[in-house]
Image (cartoon, rainbow, N blue to C red):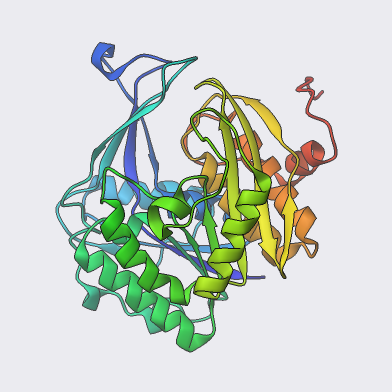
Length: 340
């Protein structure tokens, strides 16, 4: 069984009940999430060995994070403790023409203030087959850039496959710094994952004849993007999620997998959204599982998209669907009829 190590920041997520705005709520529902943690939970949910690496404060919030991840069968033995605080973010769920909104409160979090010397990557990566991180982690601080680079270099020495979700976050850094940092780190990446704007914002590679705001996507343009990433950075596989935002409540959802010089496009689902945040991470979790456990590229991208389609109907960032549920949707049963 494959052992996947995921590295990044986990935060508290505070969300007003229902579709209330932050300005009108008097209470928040609290869960925990983060790009790489979401992927680790998905992988453990599919039966793989997933280890999560981060740093959390040595207080009850840090202990609760470990307890929750353990409840999803994620290995937390490599989580460091220390620092002053756990990052938080507030999610205001959108509806119809009102978009969802995220407010970060993560400055000076334990992981962003961590020292590179605290992470013994030779020990952390012992027995690992795969390493996953995102463009969010190096965006947290200059020390996180160094920690991420150390991890990727250790993976290269050990022959460990590396995947990276570009995950551009304009609230964390600007395009110029993202391009400078990520273009350097990409030399260590085997599997590159992004959405319809990440390649442009992070790598400066854009799809032709595509208008994300209008929901118009050009498949040939995204094949060109995947080819360019492969040629420029030497990635073996590129995956691009294709989101058509008809409104905050209804999205078209599909993806491209580019591998072996060929493009494979998934089926498209029109989704009535329950919770948008974490949808991309559930695609990554489904894709990594499929790349490890399923052999055909078309089947791999179809599994990842079906898994993430179902996640969009689940509250919270963590995807909690079974392989059987994913395969049922893949096989054409999207009726939503009661299962008795």
